[in-house]
Structures are given as C-alpha cells and as structure tokens.
Length: 310
Image (cartoon, rainbow, N blue to C red; front, side, top):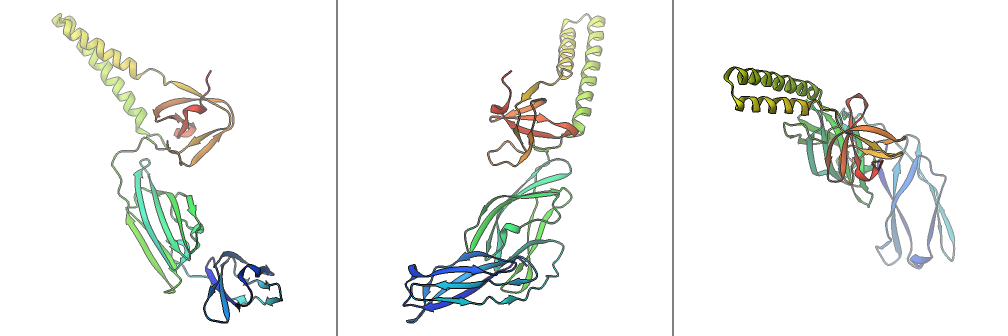
C-alpha cells in the first residue's frame, strides 16, 4: 500500500491539448497524486501519464472519461493487485524509486533523549507518510510535495542509548528494502532548549548553597580568631552568594491562548497552548523568547510578546 503507480493514456494528436478534459469516477482506495503534461511521442498520438497513490488493500483505478469537442470516451479502470509487505522493524513507511537523507543534525535534548532533525528527498515516493518507528515522538515540520521529487524536514526524539539512526524503505525499482543510516553525534552537555529540567539541577543548587554557607561560617570564625578583616569580607561574600542562590525564581505572566514552543526558533514545534492567563517561573531568556517552567518538571519557550504587561 501507499505506492505511487503510473497510468499512461494515449489519444489522437488531432484533439488539441486545450480541448481535452479528464474526469475520474468509481475509483477505490486510490487518489490522484500528479498528472504529467502530454508529450507527443509519434505523429498520431499524445501520451499523458497519471500517477495514483494506493491507499488500501482492495484498490481499483478510476474509470477515466476523456472529453473533447468531438467525442467522449470512457476508459474502464482496472483492479490492482495489492500485497502487504513483510517489512523490517525499522521500516519508515516509504516506498520510492529512491530515497536520500540530504542533511541531518543531532543535539542532546535531555539526559535520556536526543533531538534529531533531518531533511529527506524521495523520487516517486509517499514521503508524506515518513516516520521513524522507534522514535519517542516524531513529526514532519515542512513538506514540499513537488512531483516526482518531494522533500521533507522531519524531527524525531530518539532514545539517548541509540548511537546510529537506522531506517529502511522499499525501493520500487529493485523490489527490495534498502537501508539508510547516519551516526547520532551530540555534545556532552544538555542543551538549554530541553523540555525536561535536569533532575540534578535542584540538588546541585542546594549543594552549592550548603557549601557557601559552610564556607562563610568557617571564614567568619577565622576572621574572629585571626581578627582578619579580609576573612570577614570573604565570609560576607560567601553569605551573599548563598543568599542569591536561595532567592525565589522570577515569575512571568503568560497571556490566554499563547503558544508554548519546544525550541526558541521561528519554525519550532508548538508544545502546547496556554488556554488561561497564568504565571510561570522564568528560567532563561534568549533572542525574544522566554524559557518557562511547566508542571511535571517540563519546560517550554514563549515569545516575549505573549507575556502579560501587568
């Protein structure tokens, strides 16, 4: 299923192209994907190729009504023999003459998941059905359905223990599954655009406060014992920094029906919609976006313009 199949119609040259129309009726589990311009192959005939996408097991090509100024003819659609593929576990749902990964990039999203973005190009393909089966979440962000070559930009959240992204597609020319792959290379640190707050953050913050308070007490005792103004100043600085770390986070108000994004970028995926005016803890601010803390240790990015003024 989902394969693109061509159907070529031949008609007389005497019927001017502008005076020929096509009507499709009685199709079953197929849809018209594209219609090629007519090409004159010989002195007698035009040839027009139509491309249909198979949508289900019991498929039938449409009856094609060809109408000119002089006559109307009907071509009876034929049933198609559709077989289920015994596909591998990493099958990406694509059947194509060829499929290529033209670009890809990977970043660490949190301690458990990497974010992988890729651009793919398929010839005579159902690229709109592309998906990585083992991704925790995946989505087509952009699609160019030009024919016969289509392109998509796809992102996927891949478990961090997977070091190589592997997939297979069905090559319709060779009638076999073919493999595509690339290594997932990410930096060691967690990117600031993650949607899960690092569970160690709060523990590290508490540890820092404890260390600086302890250091301040020790320096203060030394200042009294040695009668050292320098140690007293260092103690005050340690207490000041511990107090700064323990200060409550700044809160921001988000407007009703504002969009919360996964990343602080123009084409980022919408994480959720803020249905009610609500306050959130502000974590960071980058290029017109504000990073906020959501429930269940999740975070998201909102546009600065979506913050309440009051």
